[in-house]
Image (cartoon, rainbow, N blue to C red):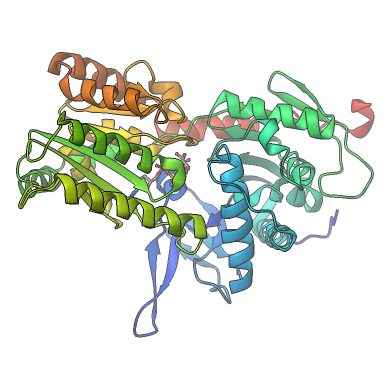
Length: 488
Ligand code: ADQ
């Protein structure tokens, strides 16, 4: 503990792997800033609007970090990553160890000690940056699986801070989590926080069970008590921490307004016309990630085409697959498989002018996304495992006409809130998935409107602002830290 650690001036500090904007090097060598991709930034953007705060994160380009700068009321404080650290901490430990481990081991996680060393080193750097900008007694909100050691590292340096952490992805059952060679260090890192927020109550319970099984901590309800250890390793002090579900959402009113704009409505009509005005448009929108169940979805679509249950030009399927983590081997393989499958399906079932599957491996602006959602008569959100899935919430919000139908996997966090009114599916069950898709196509318009109405109400009342307030009030009232004497 270094009570002499320098203090900053910000009462509210965000730490996330990425800054909300990415630095991009242009072909002429100059640099420009662009909104960085992904669910976390989409969610936090509207929460942070107008708030005075510092945001600590990587600027998206390896090498020296740009100087801290202001973007409206936000102080952006870039953390540098070398190319090697980007490979080992980010692509390696975060995306090839933790990501598959936390998503039910859909692909096998890779364990490398050098990656772990880089993860620790980079987490240390984030912790230092947080302490540099945080004022005495500030609130610090740390995000996601890339920064699980930061809570304890910050606590060690700055016991005056109130520290929260939010997990955007699932927290695995202890039977899977226990595979991680550094499981105890990760749990100790997280226990440095006052409050830990998860997408589902099951994720919070998985965390508490892991603390019990791996650390011998006491877990009762939402409280985890850790009596600490004297070995001088991360998170050694005794703590009482609350771990609970705070499901994330979207900026529902902002997205609704955007979707309702004349430009987006016109664009939706133009998209529908360019698809040949089909009777039914099926849509999938995902990062190209093995957790999203795109292969299972294509299998179901391929079989439906083969059986003649659906056929172009009456029914067409549009799959938008955002480029993602393209240097990680599992992602390269996935892309090849998906593109091969799309090619085969189109070879067998498309005709000149009538395409069975429109596949778009591109990123789009918010307007284009809203227009695409409006075109979708049936939205297919079929992940094998997903922390929440914001696309499901964006879709129902964009359908201001109350039409449309959402097929949603039971393995998403979103299904916890939406299961009663979606067309719920198990994406592993291809026969069941096909039946569910057909039901979503063929149900009566009245039934679909009834379901969409309930879904839209749910997202409207549980929006991202409600999520942020729930998280911050839970953090403000999190259990005070007991002294070592009180706990023993
Ligand atoms: P992600 O895995 O990135 O997020 P998701 O929740 O679906 O997944 O969010 C993706 C966001 O990117 C959505 O806002 C979507 O509209 C946007 N997007 C997708 N494809 C796009 C494209 N081609 N062009 C432009 N935008 C696109 C992680 C977790 C999720 C969790 C979120 C938030 O994996 O489970 O819901 O964080 O906590």
